[in-house]
Amino acid sequence: MKIATFNINGIKARAQALPAWLDEAQPDVVLLQEIKSVDEAFPRELFEERGYNVETHGQKSFNGVAILSKLPLEDVSRGLPGDDSDEQARWIEATVVGKQALRICGLYLPNGNPVELQDDGTPVPGGKYDYKLRWMDRLHARAQELLADETPALMAGDYNIIPQAEDAKRPQAWLEDALHRPESRAAYRRIVNLGFTEAFRARTQGPGHYSFWDYQAGAWNRNDGIRIDHLLLTPTAADLLQDCQIDAEVRGREKPSDHVPVWVELDL
Image (cartoon, rainbow, N blue to C red; front, top):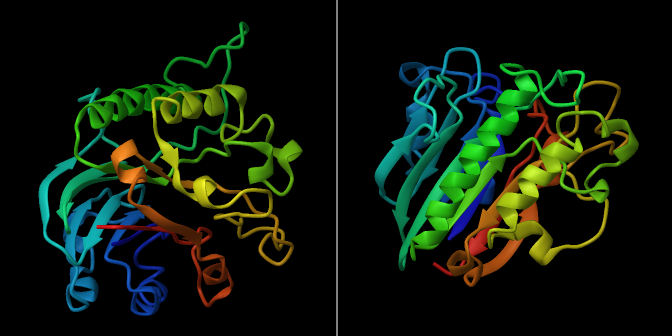
């Protein structure tokens, strides 16, 4: 089973590029982020005519996540547990059944910028960075629940986290950014260290591997990228891991997203 994560930065803007990549790559399941569309306006027919079942958790103009699956989706859930007042569409999960069941969780983790700190260095309550870290606390709790279940599971998406210096072309430029601040990286490590396998690093080591290049300042042409799109596998899912790759060349195509697909193949 080939499962991909792809922040498309607007479904309307990617109405040609996304189907073209699907036709070429033929993933079985795709977790999309930043669809920037309400559910009713999402162009389901583009994907249903390609054999995909479609589930969305949309929001007008911002955020939004979706699942495309060539296999039936069961027990679909929307919204990250832990805060009923959170109206941002950043989490969707479902069970897909191949040779066995797999719980798939698609996420669009808050960016967190601008970083607003109090005099003691802690995030300003209610600020964007505070929201990011509180969201990650909720993610930690959901991750624990997934691990407690014997069903193989993965959490994939745009984490807006640069885990290590080697995951950025210019790490010094990101030191005070919400994507690479120590608190952000520590929160990410706490989740991974529960027992998850970060699929890409399980297969590929070293610098120079990125999943995002800004539209500004010729970042793509200079390969000035960062790796912020990740797939975390529970131990039972990690046992099924066969491959994990970044389709970096997609960034150089016509009307691209600033992110590219990252995918895993599992023996399912």
